[in-house]
Image 1 (cartoon, rainbow, N blue to C red):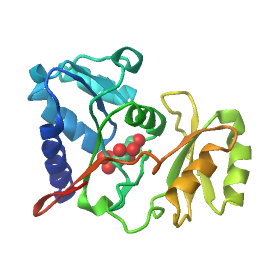
Image 2: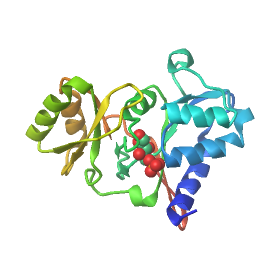
Image 3: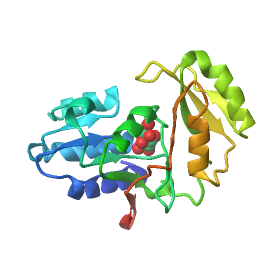
Image 4: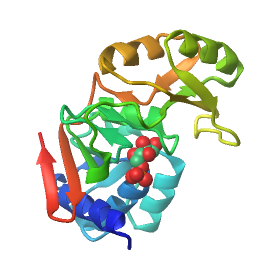
Length: 219
Ligand code: 5RP
């Protein structure tokens, strides 16, 4: 394992203490979320099951012997655990590097507590150096790109990638995000946008950042 992987693993292990007994929890997507699934496998008899934020996560949860639930059947979840591409001290995030942002945002919205796990390199003073993923209905791609340019961003179509919902991803470069909630609303208001990867209006409740010295908790 690389140092970054060890840091991700530490954050994932630290999230276990938030897992409530006998409940269905939400599980995110990506390499840090995968570490969490591996940790969760060790305590699988303590939970009822999980709602997956992607097909990839569903496959991994199933392989770990964890029962899968549909969000529509599970109701409000007590906990959602997921990684991030960037995070601030205010626990606002950029997510969607893996393209699962829409389902991730739905599960985060439907959960009482969102614990974000990441290695400490993800902590930034201001969001935007990581290209902001935006999920787009395919026929609206070009229109949405023009609207994004009008908002000051440089859109790049993510080639050869289709989301689990059958949509396209536009990654927005060149943003220095001073007002994350305002930008999140503006992007979500463009017709044809399914959702953007800014998790600002509903950020994380707790941020667990793994590093060489252990895990730092924010929130
Ligand atoms: C997937 C995500 C991931 O949480 C994000 O890309 C971070 O991934 P990783 O844990 O592999 O660094 O939002 O859509």
